[in-house]
Image (cartoon, rainbow, N blue to C red; front, side, top):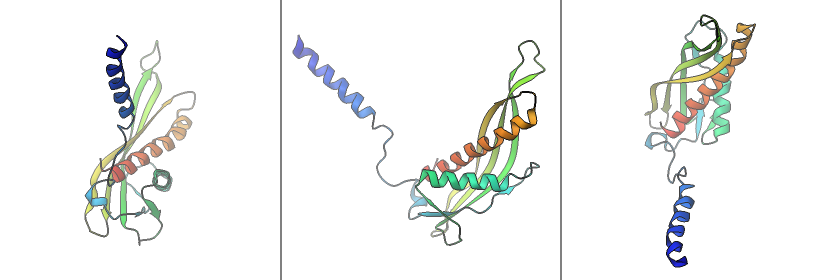
Length: 173
């Protein structure tokens, strides 16, 4: 009886052990268009919305996200292997939750920051990312001061946008 349980248990242990390697990848990062790229230049992004002051904080968030991810090193000069161009195209707000007894009163909102992203491999001239739309989101509760709540939520949405841009460039999808 014990001998008949050893094979299924061993197979189960092997399957569970190999399942831990499911996220591991072998080979190059990001596909053929990013090959040979080790540095990236991130100029100040363009803000096409009516929301003032989003260009520098979002640019800083993107640079921090690249530095934290670690695959590509950011470069402050035009001598980098790739160049990232980002344009913020819209900021949206969506009602997530209403008051229990008053559906016209909002208690939770979602803010989204959408951008168009292009990344060019300067060595080959090929586009790593070609005019892709990326969005970063964050939800926040509306208290007495909705403006202050949104002011605190917007940088988190910008950070989410930055992480998604980095993932798109580095991973290729």
